[in-house]
Length: 163
Image (cartoon, rainbow, N blue to C red; front, side, top):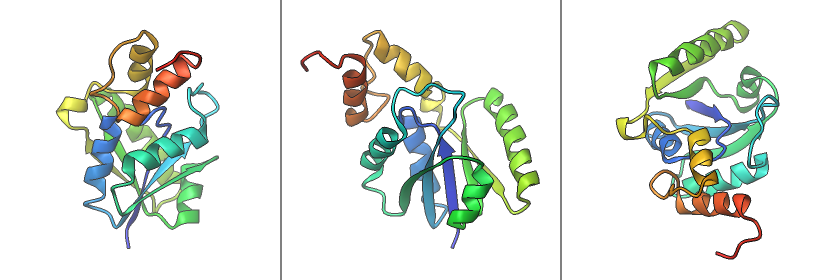
């Protein structure tokens, strides 16, 4: 059984992330979407909120599990018996940093394989950061994130406003 981990901050999950998930589940027996805790980032959503948003967005997919972990990805891989890391690439600039990370993961755990997937062209411009910025200024993110994520963004940004 091939278990793949799709790690990321997913703050919040976008249609670009879901595109990678829906394609990865056709290749691997199980895909674990692993919400990473990165102390250098300042997330809008808590880890628990992100896990719940992802669970709701992927509830229709049978071979997906949502989890989170602190620490090194290669250590988490050992815990869940995963042998592949899935990473989505939007542009060549993503490749440079992801290649460096894949090389380091492989050094730390020689069995760790990284599987790069090119993001579908109509999602290549998407990032969670851009989504949050658009939402912060009241822009429309309807075509960029699932409806429940759009609502969660509104709730975070305008907690006292009626919908």
